Image (tube, rainbow, N blue to C red; front, side, top):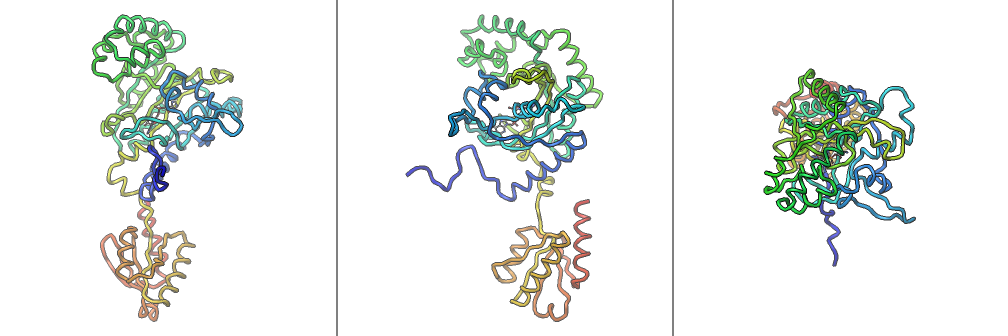
Amino acid sequence: MGESLLTNLPGTRDLLPEEVARWQLVEEKARGIFARYGFREIRTPILEATELFARSIGSDTDIVGKEMYTFPDQSGKSITLRPEATASVVRAYLQHTMYRGTGLAKLYYIGPMFRHEKKQKGRWRQFYQIGAEVLGSDHPAIEAEVVEMVLSLLSSLGVGSRLLINSVGCPDCRPKYVELLQGELRRHASELCEDCRRRTETNSLRVLDCKVESCQPIINGLPMMIDHLCETCRRHFDRFRDFLDRSGIAYELVPRLVRGLDYYVRTAFEIVSGELGAQNALVGGGRYDGLAEVLGGPPAQGFGFALGLDRLVMLLPEDVRGQAVNRPDLFLAYMGDAAFDKAWVIAQALRARGLNCYVDFSAGSLKSQLRLANKLEASHVLVIGDNELAEDRYPLRRMADSHQWNISLSELGTYLESQRARRTE
Ligand code: HAM
């Protein structure tokens, strides 16, 4: 016997309806806020040529080296389930010559990404990102604007966070710094962990990200990129910080902040939340001006971020979670066949007016129907029985305060509509 067919794969999960309601709440908030900043949605394929990610993210990164779901398709071509979407968005931008249009391309996406990571709290192999990319500008103000946009999404959801920033230099200043860094690392090679010794030669900036205790004293004494920026990078970073200050956005400068993807130049940032534990990064992003050329296109500047949706949903405070239920405006409870027929007709009429109505089909007792109404968090329950049918007035119960009164069908729709309008105000 192989693995059970009744279990999903490790690192993936089913999102059940209660959970999905919270995801939709976040997604709707994001769509609304991003629209205010002029972003429009793009949907790119989940499958791409393997080479797209290998070239853009970098072959010495953990993502490309260890974590990609890569396989040959039926024609033998190597394809990969996207581990992130920046590469795909830049590909689409170039493929559809969006740079020919006027202004910037401001694009956002929401969807699943795939990385075969070690199991840990806050890490999934299929996880979801909300991301945004601006193509066509190297203005530091656009960076501050994008950071402001994602921070306002988080605060609208009541999620507290800290913004960490750094500059990782450019192809002018970084190679000189990397040489300096490698020299230092080689001098201390015997004191470093095995990963750091390997990274010294393959991807030395990533050493700064090492969490091994015994490496910390050495890393703390290493030269930092921020002290070796060229004049252009220094000025760019100062202006970015100035725009953050002017927008009243607090940040921490973290010289050890390097990102796990190779395409970054100049500004890099992360937004973290103390409540997430070891996997505390909620948002990661930065500038990637060289990426379009790496993919074989004309030069195009880019800046963006991706937010871990799985992690964000974990952080939603209780009151925001409470808003995320698709509750029925009306639950129609009935006793007897004639009442059922009436409930069915009323539900149809109210749904046509845009109201959420629920009729139970399991023909249970009134008590079990009311139990279900409670479970579904229905705002109101209408009880239909023989007497009510004869008089054409029905007891309506408002569940929030258990207030109950009789109402005629002609008043019912208007009343429920007014209640709904009040709830969504
Ligand atoms: P990233 O830092 O690899 O950046 O991922 C961004 C966010 O995705 C992380 O901060 C985290 O919240 C979430 N995330 C990553 N891996 C996992 C996982 N295994 N399980 C759950 N959540 C995860 C990027 O992907 C870049 N494309 C961001 C970017 C856009 N840079 C410029 N534009």
